[in-house]
Amino acid sequence: MKSPWLNLAADCLDRQPPRHTALIWEGRDGRQERYSFADLVGLTDRMANALEGLGFAPGDRLLLRLGNVPAFPVAFLGAVKAGVLPIPTGPGLSVQELAFRATDSEARGILVAQELRDLAEAVRERWTGLHSVLTTDADGSLTSLLSGSRPGRPARPTRPSSSTPPAPPGTRKGCCTRSAGLPPTTPSPGFGKPTARATWWRPPDP
Image 1 (cartoon, one colour):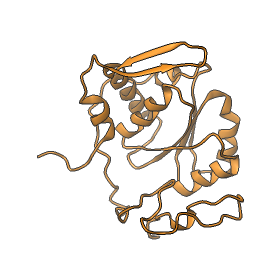
Image 2 (tube, one colour; image 1 turned 180 degrees about the vertical axis):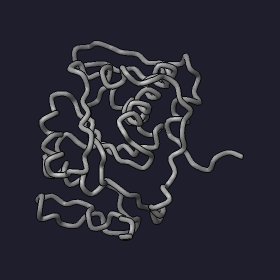
Image 3 (spheres, one colour; image 1 turned 90 degrees about the vertical axis):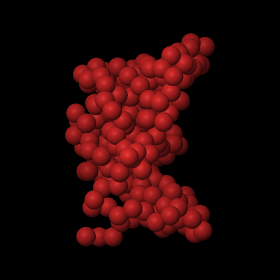
Image 4 (cartoon, one colour; image 1 turned 45 degrees about the horizontal axis):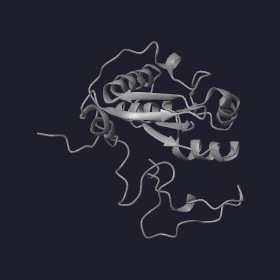
C-alpha cells in the first residue's frame, strides 16, 4: 500500500530521470553551474543526513536566509527529505522580524549565507530555542556542511507528529500561511508592518 503522505523531494528529484538536467544556475558574472537530477539527489541526501546528524528530527523547523543560489534548493529539499520543515525568509527582514519568525515557528535552526552569520547570531540571542546556526561557505556552497554526511537515503514522508494535531484546511504551523477566508493582514505595532500574525494557526496548549 502506498503511503498517503507526500514527500516533495521524492517527487521533484528521486523519481525523475537521473541524467536529465534539473537545474541551470547563472551567476552575475556569467558563470554557469549545471546539475542533473542525480546530482541533486546526492546533495539533498547529504543535506538530510547532515541535519539529522545535528539533532534535527521530523517536524523541526529550519529558517533559510539564502539568495538565489544552488544552495537554496539543496537546503530546502534536503530538509524535506529529513522531515524538517524549511521556512524561507526574505532579504528585507530585520533582525527583529527574523527573530519573530523563529519564535513563532519554534525554529530549531537557521541556515544563512556566510556573510550573514552575525545576523543569525543576533536572532539566536532573541530566540534561545535556535540551537543551530549554519552557514554556507564563502563561495555560497554547502561543501563544508555536507562534507561529513553520508550519501544515500530513502525519501521519508513528512507526517504530522503525534503530539501536534493536523492544521485546519487552509492553514499550517509556521510562517506565513493564513486561514482561508480570513482577513489577509492585521496591524503589527511591534514592527510597523502588516503581518498575518493573528490568523496563523497554532496548536492548543497541552
